[in-house]
Amino acid sequence: MKRIHYSWFILAITFFSIIVAGIVMSSSGVFIDPLEKEFGWDRSIIALAFAISLFLYGISGPFMAALLEVIGLKKMMIVSMATLLTGIILTLMMNQSWQMIFIWGVIIGLGASLFLTVVSPYVANHWFEKRRGLAVGILTASTATGQLILLPVLAAIIENYSWRWAIALFMILSFIMLFIILLFMKNTPKDVGILPYGLEKEIQESNKGEKKNPIVLAFNGLFEAVKVKEFWLLAGSFFICGLSTSGLIGTHFISYCISFGIPLVTAASFLSFMGVFNLVGTTLSGWLSDRFDNRWLLFWYYGLRGASLVLLPYALNEGSTTLLVIFTVFYGLDWIATVPPTISISRQIFGITKSGIIYGWIFASHQAGAAVAAYGGGLIYKFFNTYTWAFFLAGVFCLLASLFVIIIKKQHSSQLTKEGIINIQ
View 1 (cartoon, helix red, strand yellow):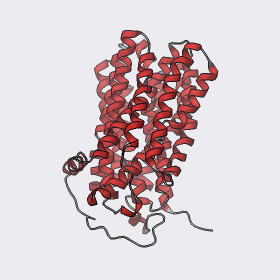
View 2 (cartoon, rainbow, N blue to C red):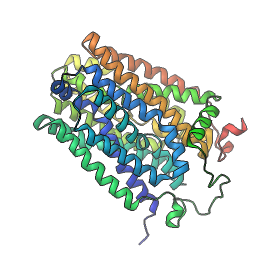
View 3 (cartoon, rainbow, N blue to C red):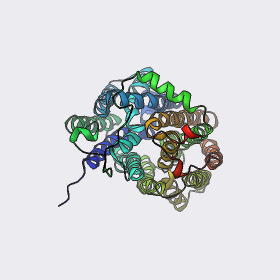
């Protein structure tokens, strides 16, 4: 019987770690109403805490990528999961809005950052020579898996017991994953005496073993990237990606449904249902990114997402369950499908060595967009008493993102080097 390559075990540990961090971050929608009712906090203040968290975990991504290069994968995962667990425990003790902003916005935002920004491309690049696109697709889809399994459970716990019991579930899951990481996680294939999956002969890396200041590494990556047009196009499209996904749908979709009389558990189930198709769509996107022009994949992803967001207010206004289900399926297939092609393009342009940090900056733009939508959606609701304009505008921006990605210059495989195309242009 053929032995399973250890890279797949590393993929599994990373997968479940991302599930835990992902469900904590994507659960914000189910907490808005109960926190508003219990503490009397303004919805825009609660949304601000979630917005800070989204922005902070995004902007810290490139520094997480640099720290990965300096101190290694296992230590980074231990510190990040322990930080996330600390924030979750402190959430049970908060009773002031400023405490929520600090605990959820800063501590949980930093704890989730590694898992939801750069660990997926890092693991794919360092543990896989073949099936990298598939590995990224699987890891990216893991946020959807947690959402799929746990959001209706969280909503039921909150509705029947308390939001604190839902937080307690996060605490248990985080502790389990911290224990598993301590026991089984490894930094590199060399730690278990193997080569990356699909690699038959070791490749010597000239910069191997260098230890540099992670802040310097992160900013050097940014300074190199900003000189390249494709970086701005990827960052701009990813800003809109974050604005139209975790910032808007992840934070406000449930509250939007509730405003039309849809019960909390039903609204959470719709969001969970998106997770089913997100899991399929993102994994398939990873497979497609190994085989087709990534620019055209992104063009269609953003265009179709924009159309679905424009459809949502109409579906809710009409009270049509059929249209809402169509939106859920359509949007779910597209939710995080943009990530594998974006990672693939950044790797082609900047090379394996530099793309981790540079993708961290691209993802920081994603989270800046998410923060704008999370807080902006709360403000729009406050002034207009509806989210309709927020969803309509997000749909229009998605159409703009489809134009950004299609004008990226096509990268030819014959030009690729370990350091990327950028060195020979």
